[in-house]
Amino acid sequence: MLKQALNNLLANALKYSPEGSEVQLELIYQDRNAIFKVKDRGRGIALADQKHLFRPFYRSPNVGDAPGSGLGLAIVKKCVELQGGKILIESEVGVGTTAIVSIPLSPYQ
Image (cartoon, rainbow, N blue to C red; front, top):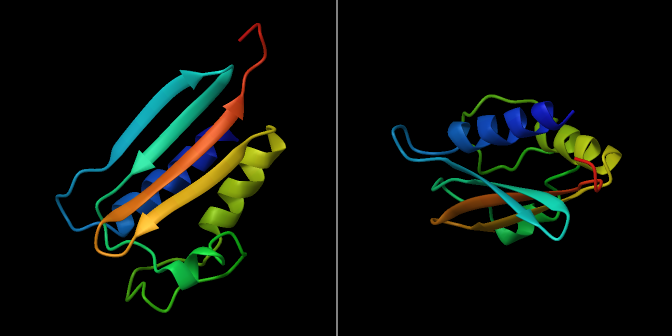
C-alpha cells in the first residue's frame, strides 16, 4: 500500500511540474514515524482547490490538459490512513507543492 501511495505522489509531482524540473523524495525518521516528503516545483495548487484534493474524482479546473481521473490523491489518503498514518499537502501557486506522509512505526520495525 505504501508503495502505491508513493508512486501516486511521485507521478503527480512529475505530471504537474515543468519538464526537466526537479522532484524530491525525502525520508525522515522522527518520533517513531517514517515521514515521506515529495516536493515539486510545479504550478502549485490554489488555496480554494486544496480543500477538495482528497475527494474522489476531483480535478481542479487549473490542471489544464494533464491526464488523470482525480482518484490518485484519494487512493493515497486511503492507503496512508489504513496504515494509521496521515497526509498533508502544502502548496503555493507559482512555487510548488509538498506532500507529507507520516506513517507510525512499531518498535520492531
